[in-house]
Image (cartoon, rainbow, N blue to C red; front, side):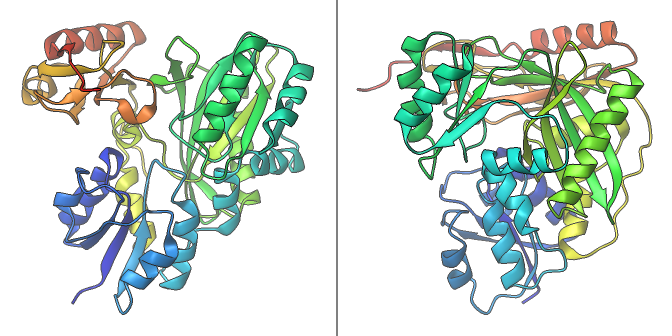
Length: 404
């Protein structure tokens, strides 16, 4: 049997990996706890296991020839990526420290401080009473997060002390380790700095302006790229990201950093994911620059030289499609996606739900319904393309009766 590419996760974000593997004739093994994930039907073999349980995965694959291990858009599997790539002695092996600082926000803050990146006030513990006391010393507003979750799960803004205890318990419930972190809320403009490192150098970089959905959860509604930054700030952000990548041992591969630039120009890096961004980032990068980050990631995993050479430069926006309702609903209809993809300025459109499916309010990243990517030569034209595409999609959701 030919060697297999081991893919950690089979959700919407990982589908691009299975498609790339099929395009290249690579055999794939999917690992996911859920048997209803869309990547499974594209895989050659499926293991219904947690991507965090590297020991069980190793046992299930005893004697298997693994050519590479790969994933995208999730931090929870990074420790497994590290262990599995070493166990199977794959051509590229995930760095241990990169996994640690991606999965533990306090470890990232310590790393950032060690290389001179500006830091801000935070406290982390599994003792919620200690965190409550620390939080009161920070002042309001605050951000409360699980220290080791992703996708905005369990993250809440706290504007009143009366909200603090509920936010702390919510974060603890959503933390695999029970660890919670409380941070002062920084004021400024939100960006995501995305890089792909090759041989210790920046092979590709794209900074996006992040659109945060109004409300207490810090959910991402979309990205516009390239970000409208002055050259000095852009250069400094890329230097920060490059320094941090090398400090965490990432000399090859992707990473993304959540950043806030304050009004005085101070650059605060909130956290890192030593993997590609979610929310369809590969499609956004392709729309902006013509690069194929997924192809490069698979090349890296199996030990093939890769390139990330831009072929063009455009303005692009990635819009996260969500239910318009604050209650559970039924997706009743939408326009054919082929017709949307054929519209002027549309790079890509994808939906993960079909008519008749139960859909939920957008309270965490995993509840998005899809994404839409548009491109244009200017920002005003970009806004027009997005408005026209959303109108043409005509997504219809009606309230659903959910059994108690």
